[in-house]
Structure formats: C-alpha cells, structure tokens
Length: 188
Image 1 (cartoon, rainbow, N blue to C red):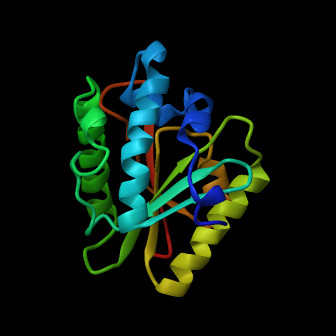
Image 2: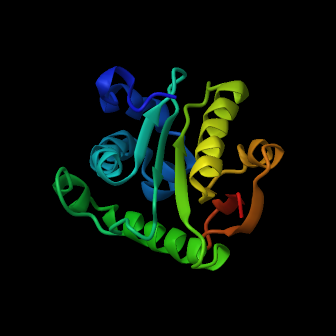
C-alpha cells in the first residue's frame, strides 16, 4: 500500500470512475453533476486527510482515507474548501459526517482509540485487491492498538469485511433513503 501513487492522487482521472460509488450517489443525487461534485469532494478531503490522517491509492485504484474522528474537524473549511463549501450538496456532506461521527461514538466506547476508514472503489476492482488494502489497515490497527471502523452505504463490501474479522455494530437505512448504512469494527 503506497501513501500516494506517483506522489499525487489524480482526481481528474479518478472522479469519472466513482460516479456509481454509493456515497457519492447519496451525497449528490443528480448524476449529471456528480463527477464535478466528486472532484470538489476529493479535492477538499484528500489534502485534509493527508494532513491529519492517512491517504493511500492502491495499484488497482482504490483510494482509502484513514482518520481519527476525535481529531478531525467536521466542517468544510481550509485549503481547497471553497468550491465544496458553496456546492448545493455541502449540507449533505455535513449531515453525513455528523451521522458517521455520532454512530462511531455510540459503537466504539470513548476509552478506545479509533480510526475511521473510507474506501472509494471503482466497480472493476477485484476482491483480492480490496482484501489486500483492508489487510494493510488491519495490520496497522493491530500494531498501533486502535479500533478500525469502516462505514459504508453499500452492502457490496460487507461480506469481505466480515470474512476479514470485522463485526457489524450498526446497520440501517440512512435518512429514509434507499441507501443502507453499515458501520463495522475490527480490533474492539
């Protein structure tokens, strides 16, 4: 797992491949605007996570971000935030961040160190590539002694995470939509 591919995540190349990613479908319901929204979202959150957490891109194109929710500033501010902050979907981003933070604080006791893992996966990524990325973060959690929390709006990866020792701590439809939110933990 590399910290960055070629020193930089190519957002322009990646955004069109993530248009069907459930999180982005939820945050930006209008498909014709989604690619532009993804560029704004990643343009803001990749640098933010590079500064306060971990960002990596696998050889197969999986972008992953790992952050400590106790240290993460849940607002759209700072460098490269203007276009996302003024997006018509900014409220969806803030609502989702708030929900994730609340659920993580319920599922994982305050006395535990925790990190939240975000995965952005293109449709053609293999299960082996996904497993390899997850195993890398599990190893990090074991070595550093934190609870690894994965949140998703898709059921696609849940069986892979379960097979790798994650337990579901929370699962429900999110905000009366067709999206099913699952929060899973490892090392608790």
